[in-house]
Image 1: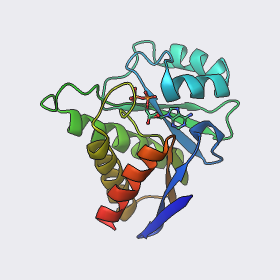
Image 2: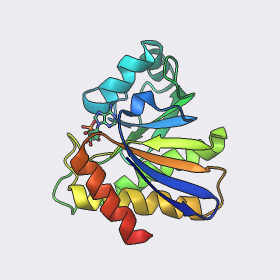
Image 3: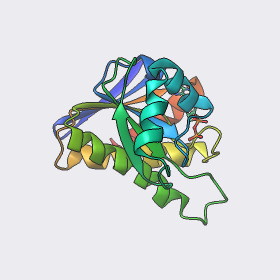
Amino acid sequence: MTVAITLAGGRLELVRGDITQQAVDAIANAANEALRGGGGVDGAIHRAAGPRLLEELRKRFPDGTPTGTAVATEGYDLPARWVLHAVGPVWRGGAHAEEELLVGAYRSCLRLADELGARSVAFPAISMGIYGYPPPDGARVAVRTVAEHLRGTTQITLARFVLFSEETYDLFTDALTGIA
Ligand code: ADP
């Protein structure tokens, strides 16, 4: 199943699947501030990339990175060349700048992708698992932020959301219909 729209020079796609399998230039990770691996998609990415991923993170980012930002590493054993480790917010009721921080996490990845020269980027549903961001809102923020970037000045020609569950995929489809 793939849903896609074209925005300026870029294509925004939604697919169901596993982000670790994506043959794109860069994949985003839903990391935590410590950048030391974790559960969910973070654990899956670390397992698939191999131990050198954690070694690079420890060496280059000993203090981690704040919520709403991202850092880039190599992809090691992944098909993707780079991993963009983004830290989304933990949902704490909505009055703690959660939306701004989620936008920041996606924007930081898009900015890093452009700096690296990545043309294709895949994203998971950042903050929508263990971090508890309300699903319909998280999907809307994600789709809107990535679509805005594709409409601006960028080298990215493909942005793909890789959704693990059918439910999340359906929410992203609704969000995409809302902006198309
Ligand atoms: P967070 O802590 O930011 O909420 P999670 O990893 O708990 O991050 O969940 C983020 C989203 O990633 C969830 O929708 C979860 O179902 C999904 N997910 C988990 N594993 C994978 C994977 N291998 N590929 C793509 N998405 C995944």
